[in-house]
Image 1 (cartoon, rainbow, N blue to C red):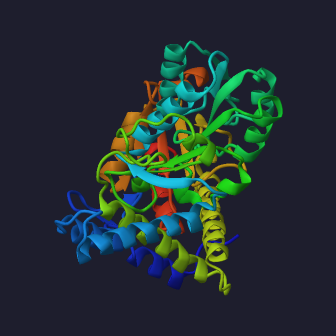
Image 2: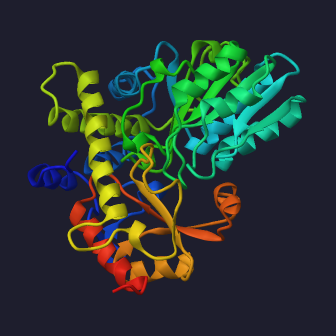
Length: 419
């Protein structure tokens, strides 16, 4: 599919802060979206608005009533975006904090004994939480190996190690290192075939900005995102939990509401700024669908984002105009393979004759923001099996343009010494 038309591209970019310049560096191209996407202007405005309001929810005054209504509306917006079947949404400190909390609740609340299963492709947040609480609960931890060539893990790989006594399972939706998505529905089905009562948690943090989420289709119990990676801001995470997860023993105030997950008074601005994200995606979907149904428009937005980002990654890999793509550079390694249909807006690569840190520095000197991933506690699970000490992550989003990709390729041609 072709990328966004020029008029739509302009409209999209106008809705984001600092789309083509950094307040510290000046003009720049932002290809560091996996580290945190650009922020909607509406989010910036609402963050300031709600930070200034002194009132809290739960009081008998007009401001408190308005805040409660706004939170209820935001949770309805979350239902439209995530499409769950039952369950509830709540916000917490961050995606990582919510990941630990949901996994802790599942592992400690599940029947004694048994095992916890996860994969080597996962972000350290879910793997650390799962291994930590499995040890404390006296449960075995089963580690499913991912495919180094594709940068992903399959349902078949899970099925090969599944046992009927698996109590909790964790799944990564999309890798922040390779940019490759995993088939959550297929993996969850493989888990439930062997252990139908297992609690299944999904890390959707990297996936959220790249398109369609459909919790009802996954048959899971928990899904977490970090809104700062999905056009909102830092300072909160969003979690969905199933009713059966809520039925487990929860950490909460004594004699408080039984099904209440939130700890203390949450920031109403967090809810308001997530509604801004859903409203933006609704607008974007309306540019690609004339449906009166909001969920249909949100699905159209996800499809459009996917198609546009596919066009960007294809240009980056295979070239634009007379500029060679990354795949044509000598000594290149593309994580996840060159032509991987599960890639979501991200290309991670290494050159055998030039350290990744030097490439990132040289690109930054030309106003092109990328990031180095090192074989450390964040990315070693992906890089070490490939024999790589580091790699360059170029992460794009739907507000990036083919012209920006061309500028990147021109810079890489010179940096790689092929110009």
